[in-house]
Structures are given as structure tokens and as C-alpha cells.
Image (cartoon, rainbow, N blue to C red; front, side, top):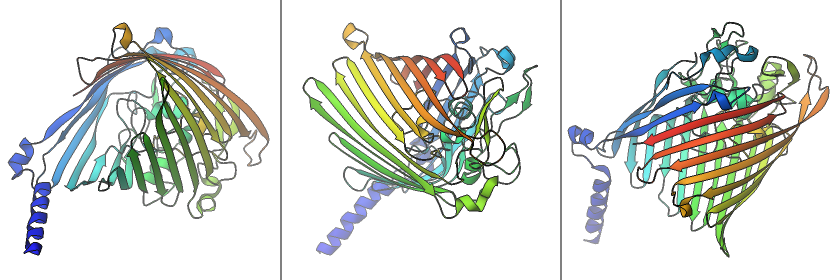
Length: 494
């Protein structure tokens, strides 16, 4: 009798988890839509040197069905369109293009992509999703943009144990989002793109410095590439054609997140088959200290070759090639390599502290890269000292710190309005080459400083509506220029 009762109880639980809708028509009726509309507008009057103009409107429209026996289907379209306010004559300003590469498509055009198309199965507290989808993890989630990086594969999210979330995934393909152009050319200074969020499978468009006409279309924003191809590119010299340099099985990842009370911890492993392995972990603790609410954090990232990666590619690999660092108008500053010895070996660690006192918040962070460059090709940015247009801490032999302050205007009668100021400094020892030989010839010290000024307003009466106005000042020692950039971002979730 007890056995029969237990079986009936288990059957009832499974039925409640699996059934949901009773037929296909009800499955569609129970579906939910959503998305966002977003505007990015760069104001040329207060911007200079690089990314001085660009204005787009775009967003995401998504629909997911209700569940039928635990099974759901979903799809989402993403789009970006010029508002008509981009100053296209800036494609020849000062002898090079100052049109932002991180807002438009591969031909500096508008485009729409089917970024999500998946089937998802739910049982108990576990979801398994197969197909195209967003994959929000420490090494794959990027900052605010119009179209995010998108991935194809299988992701299982398991919440069967209290306070724990386990994520197991195998990713085979990815499509770069709009911001990849910024990651590669601006943040990564071209030569360091693969450390700042964009692999060599992504290529920015090229325009004529005399006529402004498009001379070479970009690649990577409107196509899903195999993970090896997205990371290390193709065999042609311009990375626009040929076979993938690395024919791999993709990226297998496992993440464990724990949160209870004021303590959080997570550890992730990303095994990029035939390429490299990345282990990332961090922890955070919140506590009360008198009038202040204090948050302390620490992080570590370790990255190594998988198998005989360095010798299998030899001097033809992208990490072993000499890469020229130039000023915006094409003057050579120096030559370097992503890896000094043709191998991948990186260790990045950091600490942070934050204190919230009334309407004020103060923060400090520190990162140290002990060894080689971090290969960061999929858009992730977990490091504490990153800024809007700076991620130099992923570069080899770099020390970085960041100081921040924030003020909320709620007590002054304007709830939802905040002013944020951040300052970061990066000190990097760069190994340089002066010829095309593979003989190390010198060392160069670079000291880059960045200031971010941000005014953010979340409208209290309209859920999901917010505005962000920011101004960036960047003294870029890598390519020897000073940048100013002012942008308005408006967002409405629905």
C-alpha cells in the first residue's frame, strides 16, 4: 500500500511538472513575448579621435511558447538600424574613419538576425535548452549593446540543490554582436582584440581614407561560426576567407554558482577543445560595518594550452604572428605578438571593496596579470578593473586599479537618478619586435588612464525604462592618442 501511494504521489508530481498546456493550441496561447527597444547615440560635438559618431535604434523581439509535456520552443529576432543622425562624412575625418564600428553591421549598415531559435525542456528544477540562445556566463556575457553575442549549442541549468545553480553546456557556434567592433578596434587597439572580447573570426569593415567608400566588408556579425573559427579566424591573410585555422569540437563548460545570505561564490571551467582551457572563479561577501554596507570580493582566472596547441600551429598561428600597433591614421608604433613564445599561459587575479553609506557608494578594485595575455575571444568581461572602453588588465604583465564613487539623488526628490564616476589606470610592460623576425628586441612600458562619467536614470513609474548619458576620457598610451566620447543610451524593456 505504501509503495502504491508513493508511486501515485511521484506520478502526480511528474504530471504537474510536465503537462502544462494540454495541446498545441493551448501551448501557443500560453506563450509569452518580450524584448527591448534601445537607442545608442554618440554626440560628435563632445567626441573626438575614435568612435566620434554613430546613431542607431534597435532591439530584440522574442516569443516563447507555453509548455507541453515540459517542452517549449522559442525564437528571437535582433535588429539595429541607423537613426539618420550618424555623420557619415566622418568616414574621412582627419584621414581615417571616426564612425563607430560597434553599432552597425558588417558593411556599416542596418541588419536583422535570427539570434535565438531553440527547444527547451523543463523537468523539476532543471532546464535543458538546445539551439541558438544567449549564454550569460563570466567569459561570454558582454556589456550593454544593441545586439549581444549569441551562441549555438546545448545548455543545462540545474537548480536541484538549495542555494546552488549548476550549468553544464557544450557550445559549437557563436555570432558576434554589434559591440564586437568596439571590442576589437577601440578597446583592443586592433592588435589586442583577442584579449578584449573579439576573436580573429571577427573582422571590422574598412573604408577608404580619401573617399570614405567601403573598401572591405567586415565579417562575423551576421553569421554563426564554429567556435574554433570565431576564436582564431580563417586561413586567408585578411581572415575573410579560407578554412578555419582551428577545426575544433567547440567549447564545453561547467559552472557552479552558490549564494546564501550575504555570500556568493562561483567557479567556471571552459574547455575549448584543441585550443585552451580557462578556469575562472570569484567570491563576494556583504556585511554591515557601522553605518556602511560593505562588499568584499576576490577573483582569479587561469588559462593554459590544451594538448600540443602551440607546436601544432607553429609560427602560422594568430597568437604567434607579429601584429602591428598603429596610431589611428596608420603610423606604426611597434610590433608585438599575442604570445611571446607561441603558447597560452595566463594568470589574472584581483580584489575589490565597496562601501555604501547613505546615498553614497565608494569602490576600489585591483587586478594583476602575472603571465601572458588572456585569450578572451567570446565577449566576456569579469575582471574588476574594466571600464566602458578599457580592458587592458587582460593583457600580459599588467597592473591595474580602479576607483569609483556613486551618488543617488533619491533623498533630493529624484528617485532612480544616479551619478557615477570611475577612474582606472593600467601599467603594462609590452614585449616588442622591430623587424619581422621572431627575435624579441625590446620592452615598452605603457601607462593608460581612463575616466568614466555616467548619469543614469531609471524611470520609477515605467518598469524597464531607463536612460544613460556617459562621457569617457581615455589617454591611450598603446596607440598614442587621447579620446573623448559622449553617448546617450535609452532602453525600454517589454
